[in-house]
Length: 114
Length: 114
Image (cartoon, each protein chain N blue to C red):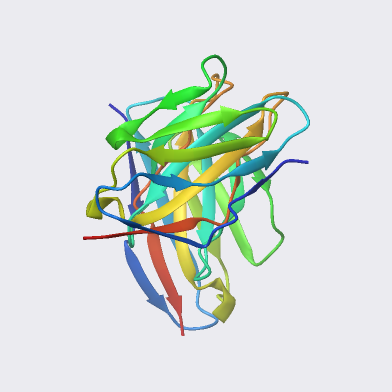
């Protein structure tokens, strides 16, 4: 069966510090991968998605970036965090070759920027 | 463009009573529709989806949803609510034509009282 992992689970960082969040998927190959942010107001915002190694699409311009160095690894980064980057970050995966693809979510990372 | 609306921020229901969480959508082509549930500080869990066929879709934990094309709705229902159903529920849509990412509603908090 497929499993998606995210770490760390919780992170507290000062403003201006760098960020690296990691997401890995087990039990499947060539997945589509997604990064979402959920602010306190509860809505989900798609940040990035990837259909393959090195292929990243950005949905929202901001000080975050994403990379996919391996097929089942998706990393969210920032060089300098802002207060507004606080939130709950969710990674998700879906089958690439299935059109009606369900997205399956990881457990999330709670980021607080102080 | 595609969009989804969840008109209720919160739904309150007594345990044992039927529940309905409302969702309406807008897409250019035919829709793929999804419901997810989120418990506090957790990732989203997939409940059910409509792709084609029978308008009544059955999912996990006794939930079901009815696709109504004329009303562009996909309401989530359960015949008898449990206190443990209390959570945040998200409706999501994507157009079946071509490739597009999921668009999520803002979420509806379901509170089931004992």
